[in-house]
Image (cartoon, rainbow, N blue to C red):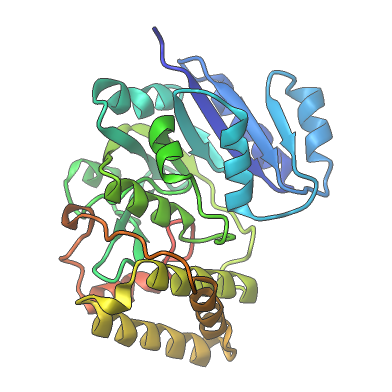
Length: 319
């Protein structure tokens, strides 16, 4: 039997991006169901989707509640054996879905698969999954590298990136999907860590290729972006008990440096305020199990992590 695939595409305005994404999905070589979750668009996106894409399932939330809520709602709408999360600013090659779910059909222990996302032009990698350092900060894996590097084993793959990744529905449901306390940023990293802690393995599919056009939903280094990313960082540090472990000192030094740099460069305390809010939001909640050692890239030094954080704004989640 052919595997059943649900492709969940969250959308918020920018109808043309969503339409272009759907055109590329229409050319895929395997059958699949597309579920677009409209997160409160004001540009008529839901009506246009129903008119121009009648074969697509449209879930209209009515008000913007953030990425995690939209994705969870979309996943719950389907029942496919595999779930593919896809940003609406991604254009997949025709064989991408087939190659993306293939590792899960071959090995029942694989719970997630990372797609290879290239920048426009196809000469540089946008991301090939996400990697995490000793402090559980996440970074888009191989960002800026040539596509040929996707076949190397380094850095360690922690899980898929948010732009395009596949999940076994059984694994997704076992860990409860995305944590809706996180509005945006690092939610995919958190999911990857929980899946690895639950015993699921992850692999990259270097032949499952797409182009990530890039999005500015929250604005690069905008005040809102920095507060949301800071919230997620503070929240996850507490949820995973990072300050109780061997990486506590490094975490404090790193976060202090990031906050100080943000304060000096942006002249506000959004990064710090977000972290404080996230820390408080995790109060009283159970501490997550630490992920297995093989899910973390221990070779990423403190200095290297600081350099990565300079440009690590996006779904993988650093800041």
